[in-house]
Length: 260
Image (cartoon, rainbow, N blue to C red; front, top):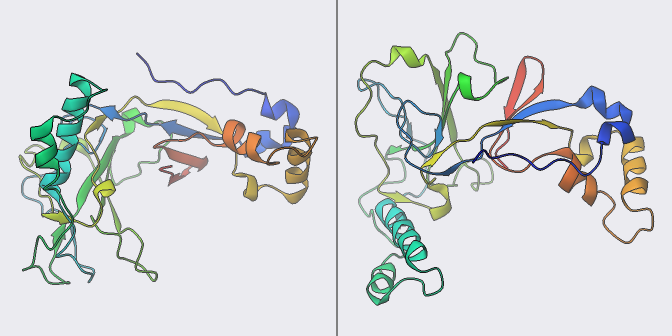
């Protein structure tokens, strides 16, 4: 079944014609659990990575000896998925609950120092054929996205570290058979599950706060004429940006990644 975005409840350009000039395209990826191959666009799937090329690592100093075991994160998801398919009402059985109880945050890599290189997690890879409008200049027709399994970066020390790599897919004649993974991650949510994609091109309009103040006021009066609800809620929720994983094209020839 194709994944599609529901029709908008109102013709926003008919209501506010100046939004027509601010229209932009985005591709909703609609990731769903599956078994992608190295040749597919995917989230959390295997990368089309050359066997002889070093895997990207995080070398930014931060604590990396404690957290959740990477293998435990995947195993927990496997157990919960199996239990849900078996009987969503009863949940995991006693044996499964006992195993789940052992998956705890802790000092699981005591030998790692704060500056030891750790493999980055494979987050997504996108082929140009699957994401219309996403620029792929001379760097190739395949975009690969990685991030560190810890949010310990930047000035706040609470930011992700993201790494992008572009390449020509046809140049990878001998793919890496087993991609490296970190032994421990800081948060379970940073480990993406393997998903196949169902790309869909949609039209979006700027976030409410990006609009001209005069247009904001008109939208507020239209969305909540009696003042009984948040003035911008209808525009934000139903008319401007679509939720989900999506690389968005902001104007011809430019793009920005917008995982929501």
